[in-house]
Image (tube, rainbow, N blue to C red; front, top):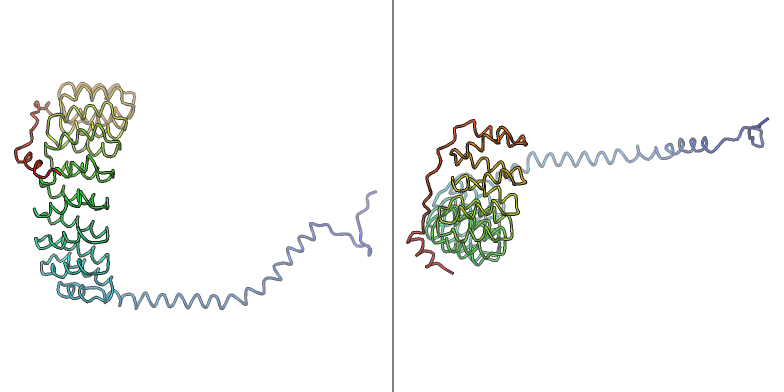
Length: 381
């Protein structure tokens, strides 16, 4: 018969599990008294800190905001001159731009030239651009050429584009060609596109062909699209065929939709057929549709049969719908009824829900005007 283990006094021995349970049970009792001693002072300090923060939010911050705000032109000019904090002067410059008063130009020009706060100068440049007066051009040009901070020069380039006067073209082309900051060069290109002056054409084409930064080349292509000058077609076509970055080729394909010149349609057709980037082929199909290039119909139909990307096929369907004609209508009916892809059938059905346009007349590509040619030669780098 098995006997249970006993101690010397005859009591049953207790196993390790029961002892461990008792040890765990007793341990919190030794630590518990410390909490009631520490908790009240800690909670009291936190409550006091919260109360002080609430008082600051309710009383101090509104008073500070009131001291830094201004509403009318004259008080804001004074605040821009004499404000004790950078924040106060930033607010003053911003409000002056919103008011749009030409009386504020001298004060804003002085702040842009002399204030030590970077964002004061940024707001002053933006305000001068919003006012849009000829008197804004000189201080903005000075800032674009000489301010040590990239963000200020970038805003000065943007503001010159907002002003839009003929005299802004020269400082913008100089910044596009020579500024060390690619962000400033991007903004210079965008502003030249806003101004739409032919004198910027050669500089934008040079940036598209030669700038080392992808973002600058994209901005140059977008600006050339806004100029819509046939003289830009050769540079755009070359970039579509040879630029190593697909983002630039997408921008160029988008720009070519706006250029009516010889060679544009074949370049877009080639990009649609051969470019390795799906986004480029997609943009090429879209541009062919926007241009309503009838000779592109065979390649668009080939794209519907062979392109591996459904997004490109969809864009080819939209292009067929924009171009119109019997061939386009027959293709759309076929893909509506027989495509193995739901999205293709649905897209074709949506296009056919509206009457297709009449087929386009044969295009007569434009040639560069004498003024464009003279401008290109005169401002060649």
